[in-house]
Structures are given as structure tokens and as C-alpha cells.
Length: 311
Image (cartoon, rainbow, N blue to C red; front, side):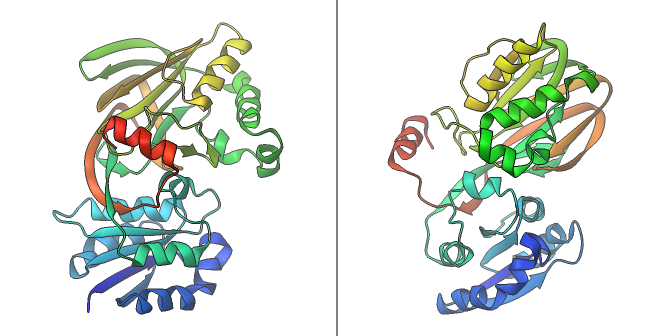
């Protein structure tokens, strides 16, 4: 009998993981797994458990929010031969669930994680050596997607993101940055920067397009320069939300696998929605197809896009 390590955050989803533990374990057992369950005890514990315990198992499944998945990935990235990873989303934002096209109902996600699904190799990022799953960001709008009230998102959609971002502009000072990426260089004052590999960020689903591929070894990089006007910011942020591949207004967009951001003062980052550290020189690298992660099947148009781009 094969062994499965189940790492779960008992606090995620207002305690719903702990409440639904028995049915999830039953799904795993019915699928033929011998299960060991590990409830995380504190921040960082999922990473430690994944690193120390998973070599004894054939598969790892984690349950919780995006932070729990990010921590588990960090632990697995420490291993030379990490096992297949499954994820059951229970958090409030669940960007990773959207990116991996996982069911919203935990039992259905558990069935997918426990089943004989075809694993997909996934790119994993590293910011100054610290792994992240889908986004590393700095500057003005870093917290907007996480802080914008849900009812505002529901009512205004992408416009809510723009409204919150523009509202915060009077209190923001841009960062003067030199950005080296894949043999290219640029330098300017930037309010915001984002290195991503995602269809959804901060609970807001971005308009998918063919250039967003989860396993092509490239990140989508977006930088918002110091604007001439508020309208310039609004236009730039709108193109960011639509994920159009061209630069527009104060927005610069490109794809890259390796970047170095050099700032004249410490630059604070968030990675996967959590604090990612503050340094003056920051290196971001794409680790192509670093982990095998169970995903759900995407609609036909997106699958076709993946075929065209190697995803």
C-alpha cells in the first residue's frame, strides 16, 4: 500500500479543514492510500514538515490557504527528488486553486488529489532563494488585491482593484530601480512591480491569454512607472488586469526567466500574499518544471492555448 502525507492547516477557512477532516481522510483511504495526517502548529511548519517527512511518502497533499501551499512547496523544493503534490484549497483567496483549476468543493478536490491524475510539471519561482508558487510583488498595489473588500470586488469586479489602487496613490513614493532581465536592462521610477505565473491574483481572476503558461520557464513581469496623471495609472492598471502582452501608458510588460532588481533603498516584497523580505538587491529566478503538481483539466480553449505554447 502506498503512503500519503496529508499536511493541513487547522486554522484555514475559519477551521473548516479540521471540521471536514474525517471525510477527506475517508476519500484518501478509499483510494487505497495509507495516510499520515500532520496538522501544522505555526507559520513555517508546513515547510518543515514537507522537507523532513515527505521523503518517506509516495505523495504529499496539503490543505489550507495559498500560504499553506506556498510553504509546502518551499519544503519540497529543498529535496532532490520531491514526491507528487496535491492541494485541497480552504483559504479565503485561493488564487492557487484557480491557477491549478481545482474544484471549490473540498471533497472533490480531495478525490482529485488522491486519484490517478496525470501530474503536471510546474514552474516554481525563487525570490532571493525563497520559493514562491505564483507571484512576487512590490510597491503601491502589493496589498490592494488582498485588502479590497469582497463586496466591492463582487460589485465592481476589476474596477474595484483600480479604484483601491488609485485611492492609495497620494501616500505612495515610487522606488528608483535598475532592472536587469535576461540580458536586457531598464532603469526608472516605479510605483509597482509584479513577477507572476498565474491566472488569478488576490482573488481577482485575470483575463487568461496564450502568453500565460504555467510550465514554459518564463514569468510575466509587470512594472508600473511613475505616472504623468491619475488617468495614466488607471489605463496602465487596466491593461495589467487584462494581462495584455503589450506595454501601455505607465505600464511595462515583458517575459523573463531571470531578473535582478537593484534599488537605492531596501525594497519590500510579498510572495504568494505573504511578507517576502526587504533587500536592496533582489534576484528572481524561474525554476522550470521544478515540481509535479496535480491540476484539474482546463476548458478546451485554454488547453488549446497550452498546446500552442508548449504547456
